[in-house]
Length: 345
Image (cartoon, rainbow, N blue to C red; front, top):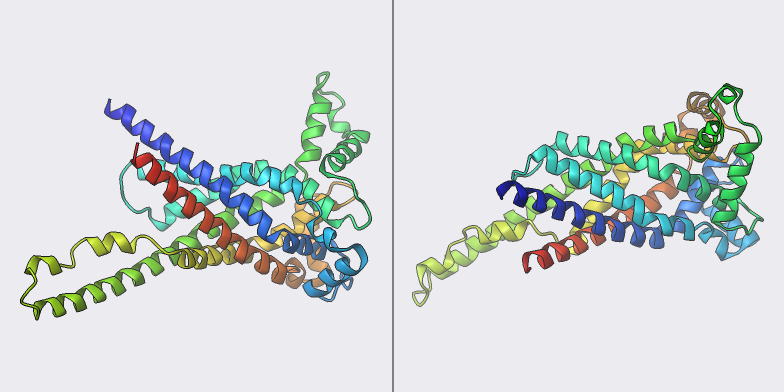
């Protein structure tokens, strides 16, 4: 019975993470998609095409209208719930396993490991979705939707199957080539998201703990002040002024603004670590023909050195910081609501 109870509790925790993560992902996409479009266009453009993020946005608005910045929105909106659900679900599951059911705060290495695992598994979901989204975002005169672009990508991939698949069993070349086509850029996505998502959660949790500690110190100081005032008030019972565990419990809960600030730092950490591989992935997924990761990185470095890999950093941070703030704020709010609802059952 105890084992069953533990399993049920673990499943409840995973379920809450899945739902809260989905809500956070959808809210984030609605908030920052135009900045995502600008970042992708900057990354795949020939050097000198744009003077920066503002120039890219100005040209898009002038030549294509406001809708151009929201191109490809329906595709990530439909998918955000899925891959944020996967990311937060895997993260929560791995953390629970590493803690082995014990009610204790995870160590930083456990957070990094869980984040890396979440990023790696999430890459399998993200790659085909971002392939279609990126092509939608850079299409300057095309009004095709996500499924039309998906059909075009598959048709291009099927026209020239690799000769190495010629001797494969009947039916397998098509299956393998379809996977190769849809998961183009997977190595870059893995290199981006394993360390990137690890940094995402680490930066968030470190900021979260610092803010919670500061809040606890302030509460203890306020409690001590009240205790001194009460000590001089003969009409009060001495036991009513103890500063015990109540403030400690309260300090664990951050307000919305504090949660958003911690989430923003998580987004900053992600893009500082992940952007070079994100630039390579964008180029790989929008190129006319498939190209490997290392030659793509070498080409980008030859074009402009390390700065070329960080093209779009401004728009990435402008997108990532508020985006992560929205994700973690929504995630924390929904998670707290679900935990409260489960506790009342």
